[in-house]
Length: 335
Image (spheres, rainbow, N blue to C red):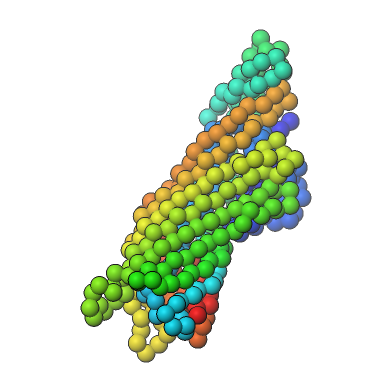
């Protein structure tokens, strides 16, 4: 019997996407992403993980700015430096889905054999009910000589309406009214889960510098980010399993309060975020190679927020309206 012990989400704990309670983790047999995906078909995995793609895309493209002012934030002449952490929470999408029966090709010692996976009517997504649904069954062709095989389906990992994320970021500027911001996590091994790496770069340019006596600060910003997840070395899926990347373009506006260290800001953003997944499906009869692509639902967001600067400490919070609404908050040091 196979079990999709859903380690996709615990693997993303590195980025604080979700926190899986230890009591739940102890009840699972599979300890990493590669082992989790190795026991489920493409169609099921696609639907099961789509909400985490939506949440991850919404979160990664949040918290990209705190003001539209480029330069003039810090206390060091000419160069501004920002070091901080931004936390986001994306409101999650669907909690259940209706799986369609699917046919897979399995490479066995005798050659390639087709098996049809029969699923129950309604099952939880990664953000759904934490009770496991009824088993599915792999039905093999009678000519194959293989017996039908049960497949244990995963419960939802966390029945939640919001998925959090936390990312460190560093910014520096300005050169000709332009600054840059970097998000970076080197390849990091997480116990038996495998490894994760993240890189993001934002470049922003001031528009208000071209408008004499502009009553507000205006800027435009472009961002590109990449995320990679790999299975552990002793897994059947030890290589890269998830390759995710996305970009965002936004227009920003902000206004500082003259008598207080408060800045109100907002913006419009166009964004895309996609995920490529590739893994090996394993049954007692053999293996099958599976791959699919997913796109996050967010494409356009409108956001508004406020930041407060106390000496060298800067705090901010904002809310974004999109397909997956997102709230973000940041704390950092400005020099």
